[in-house]
Length: 264
Image (cartoon, rainbow, N blue to C red; front, side):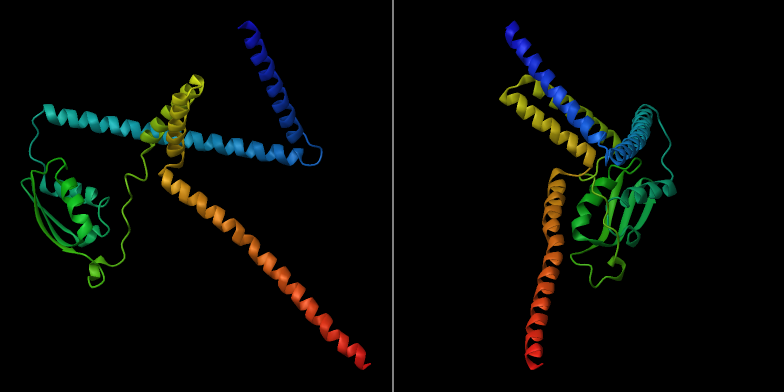
């Protein structure tokens, strides 16, 4: 057992020495070493700034969520007067802006906790909108007077618009930080096990880490990577086509030159 441990340490030392030597050769190359060190320094500064920004955004997001939970708890335990109608309308409109493509096409009314929605809307947006509005604080009931349309072509108020952000595609900073930290811990734990289950846990942890860093679904990351691989060969084609055209033109010029010499 001791012999095996010494062998593992010996190989680890050899690998570490080779890695340090390769890094030193790369960084202190006489021709390109200075440029490489400058690029590495700029990358490190950029990563540091991005990390600070992400940490600040995560801290603010966690603080706001805790304040929201605290406010909800106070509302549950304390008797509050009925929400003002204008304030309730603003709450509904704030929620509606994240759910529908054309929020300004919908009229919102409120009276005593009863919310009325009217106006044109796309069919696919009706059910999520009604389900979300019913969860707004202060809403007792929702009266649906919406006019649903399958296609927006003939409706002027449904032209254009901005697609609402997908809550499943983009995660808030707090959730991203939790996914990244838990993914790293799970990957390290899985790698230490050195078993099939450990490798599976490491893969799940790596997927969580990538999801937290990219802030997009793994399918979207895979599609972008595939598109980049498809675009890179296309960039090489114009040069090859241009060289082929140049060779063809030179051959044609040479063919034209032969008769002229023969005439002289």
